[in-house]
Image (cartoon, rainbow, N blue to C red; front, side, top):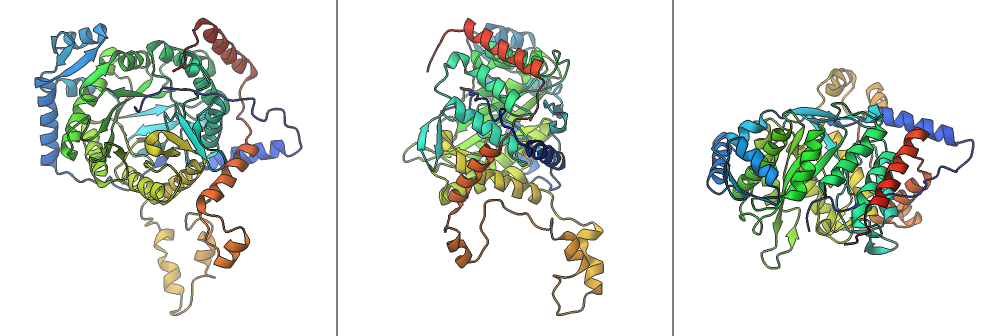
Length: 521
């Protein structure tokens, strides 16, 4: 399993043929809600840090030593080797070694913060600085729901999850390969995937990275949707994985080259199972992650200085008894905190975290492991969060109920990230001075002014009495989530798009599909 973009999925016609007097009212209500919901999360909490300055300097020094003495293998992409040679690297065949400090120097042209533009400008997101952007699950070949169980993902599933992400106020981004539609040829999936993001959502999205030409198709589709000329606007932030340990291949570099050429962002992200693809220690994983990411980020800057890039880290522990990936364990959290600190020192945005678990069901294991990943994500100051909703089974599956439960927790984290309110209203001194001892605060002016927004309200939790809960069906959290996602999809209406733009997008997809062979895999 990799963290790479390997699929795509589009959907049907939505509910465009629906008629009725309430349609415009519902659309207006959704529009008002969208305006009220922030386009991205602005954190007020200081990032939690676990490593000393001395420890970070040692890791940076060891990463330089690794790049200087071992270097990286550049597979099947001679032009990338030549770029590195021209920049001052030592080249021995396909092995590229970096003089100390060179990779870090090359990355200095990357922006510390950038804006990813959405089709709806109110959905534009900031990536970097004090911003956190939540994006859904990525790359799963299977889907799961309580009704049908586990099965291969389809095009319709992909469209469903794009719609659910669009409807959630707590997901800021439409994501990329939210699941893999095995009913569509591999060679053509990327077209349906990008079209689905552009048509059934107006949030920012990710392009395809499974081949350079598929990345170019993503850029061309984005041009159509954004008015024919992107200029210098960044409208895609796409995932580029290293082949750990210490290898970069032609597929990923070709996609990164296309995106950097067009000033589109790349998340340069080593995908590491500690103990298998890197040493079994947190400091060793952090060192290798930094070395591999520096190479990928440097490559984008050699293609186009100033192209936006994100320092990514996906690090998981593994069972040393079975070799299976494990999630929600303490060691990857330590890696996240450490690499996040390294990214801030480097001066680039950081990607990591999510709602990760190894559980096959949206059960207690899924909840605990996801919480143990999501809380460090927020505390660690992650800027771009993939797999924020839906992840099951170590990423092999995306769950409908898990998606709803995770999205609810993202809302809770959005409130948590605001930290302590020390405004006059937050301190509430006046009401305490005026209030006699021994009397409750339920009827005070301060409570009445704040009761609607004082505490986060979960959309999935049940806080009623046992008797009321029993009378209402004694449903557990996953059963309640099952009802929620079905209702959301039943009530979904697509965001507006110009008919001419939509027709041009469809024509492009149809033409490119005719040009490509059917390849299943």
